[in-house]
Amino acid sequence: MTGRVSIIGLGPGNKAQRTPQATQVLARVTDLVGYGPYVQRVEAPAHVVRHSSDNREELDRARHALEMAQAGRHVGVVSGGDAGVFGMASAIFEAIQNGPAAWRSLDIEVIPGVSAVLAAAARLGAPLGGDFCVISLSDNLKPWSVVLQRLQLAAQAGFVIALYNPRSKARPWQLGEALAHLRHYAPATAPVAFARAIGRPDESVKISTVAEANAEWADMSTLVLIGCAASHTIERPDGQDPWIYTARTVAAP
Amino acid sequence: MTGRVSIIGLGPGNKAQRTPQATQVLARVTDLVGYGPYVQRVEAPAHVVRHSSDNREELDRARHALEMAQAGRHVGVVSGGDAGVFGMASAIFEAIQNGPAAWRSLDIEVIPGVSAVLAAAARLGAPLGGDFCVISLSDNLKPWSVVLQRLQLAAQAGFVIALYNPRSKARPWQLGEALAHLRHYAPATAPVAFARAIGRPDESVKISTVAEANAEWADMSTLVLIGCAASHTIERPDGQDPWIYTARTVAAP
Image 1: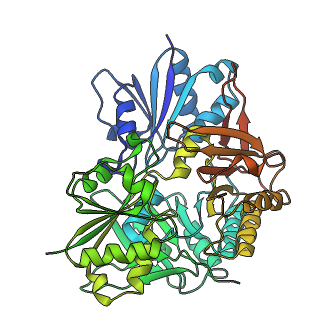
Image 2: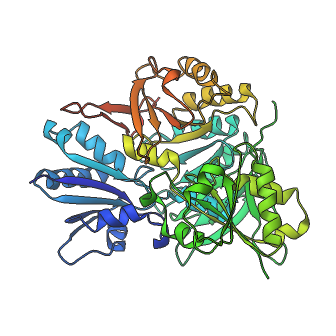
C-alpha cells in the first residue's frame, strides 16, 4: 500500500475560488491535517479522519502527516489560500529534509491555490501591477531586525509590499513599528489598503496612505498592501470604494 | 443596458487549476478580449465575440474593452495565470484613470486566478516558503537600470526572487545579465529553477544553482525562481527530480 501526501491550497474563504483540482484531490484523501479552521472548512465523506491542530504546531503536524503517509494513508494537508505562501508546504519539506530517508520516496504533491494576496489585490483593483514582494510580519521564526531591513530594501526597490500576518493578539505592536519604519522609505501619498477576510461574508476594505495608515485597522485576518510611487487611487462616484492600481510603466530614476 | 468588464485570470494552462468563479463568469460574457492564445483557450458559446490582439497592445485592448462595456456589452478580459500579476488588470485601470469620467461608473470586477509563480512553486516543492518577490525582467516599460537595482536589493533582502518574462526573441540578453548581476549578491549554492509551461502538456523543469544557472535554459514560457540562503534542494532516489523548498526560519544576521 503506497501512501501519499497532497498539500492543498483551499483558496480564499469563497469556495468558488477553490480550484477543481483541489476539490478532486480532497475527494480522494483518507485523512485531513491542518490548522483547525481549515480542516473544518472542508466537506468530506464521514470516513475521512480529521486531524485538527493549533496554529503554531506546523512541524509536528507535518511529521504526523508524513508518518501516516508512510503507513499507507492518503493525507490531505490543507492551508488557506496557497499552501506554498506561508502555509503548510514549507513545513512538510523541512520535515522531510530532517526526517528518515524513506520519506524522500513518498509520493508528495502540492496543489496550488489562489493566495490571499491575489484575492485581496483583485478586490482592490490592480495594486500588484508592477514588481512586488510578499513579507510575513511575524517574528516568530525570524528576527524582527530582519523584517525591518526587508521592509526598507523593498521600499527602496520600489516594490509594492504585501504584508501577511500583520497583527495578532500575541503580536500587537509589529505593524505600527513597520508602518513607522516604512514612512522613511515609501512615498507618503502612496496608497495603503487593509483587506480583511476577502472572499468571506465578513470581508471589509479600508484604504489610506503611507502617511496616514493606522495599525489599529488590522487584525489577524487582514492583509495589508502598501503601494509604491507608481501606485494610484482612482476615486469613483456615488460613494463607491476607490480602486487602487499600480501602473506598469516605471519612470527613469 | 448596463455594461460590465470582468477581468479574469484563467490560471495556468491546466484547466483543473481554473477557479469555478472564473468559469462561471466566462459563461456570461458577450465578448472576449485578450492576447490571442488566451482568448483562443476559452471555450465559449458561438454568440460570444472574440477580439484577439497582439501581446504588446495592452492599453489599446483595455480601451476597446471599456468602450464596449460602455455600449452595454459584458466584456471578459482574459489573462493567463492571475490577471493582476503582469496581466491585463493594470492596463484596464490605467485606461480608466486616463479616460472619460463615465468609465469610473462602469461595473468592473477582477476575478483572481492561480498565478504562474504559484503553479511553478507547487511543481517544485515549496520554494516560496519565506518572504519573496516577483519581478518582470522585461525592460519594455521600465529602465533596465531599475531592473538591475531591484534584483540587487531583493537579493540583499534575502527574498526568493521569481522572474516573469525572463527572455524572448526580442529580448535575448537580459536574463544572462541579470544572473551575472545576482552572482554578486545571492549565495552561489542557492538553488535556481527554470519552470517551463507548468500545467501544460509540454511542461519541463530544470534545477541548478546561482553559480551555474544558464540563461539559455529559458524561453518566453519559462518562470525562473532564484532561491535565497534559506532555500534547499532535497535529493530523491530513483532519478526523480529533487524538491526545492525555502525554510520558514531565518537565522539572526
